Length: 158
Image 1 (cartoon, rainbow, N blue to C red):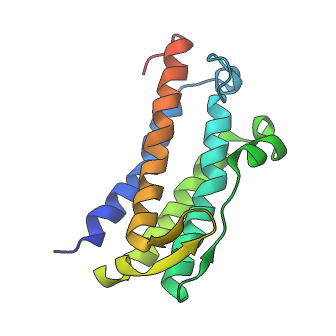
Image 2 (cartoon, rainbow, N blue to C red):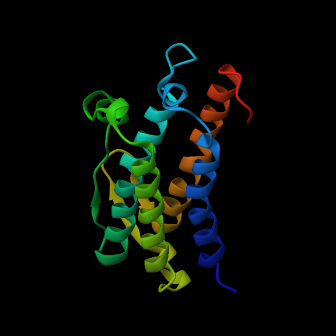
């Protein structure tokens, strides 16, 4: 049985998990910062929408190149410079779903052997495709926990 197939399924499930986490929120609720010093829900969604393509690009590079360089990215600088509160949450959610759909289609054409391929991250050093896919798969659930906290702070159902 393939090791990669269930990993891809978990990866794909992230987009629906995020969509469910923000379901029913108004724009005012999405941009609220009910927990001092923390991002709004829309900022979290935009962060995920900005980094999902970066993470997919890293995986593509590892698939296509020998030991490619993988550049780090500063999430705080992205949040400060990329107008998160002016962005459309539906567009952001759609971008995540499309990115994951495309990447899953690519991954489904691969054998389990590709999981051992390596890229060299500028901050984390060597990363296998397996590790990259795991990091990417865990990224949305990690942030959904914070969205749930925001919903609770706003008195919304979780």
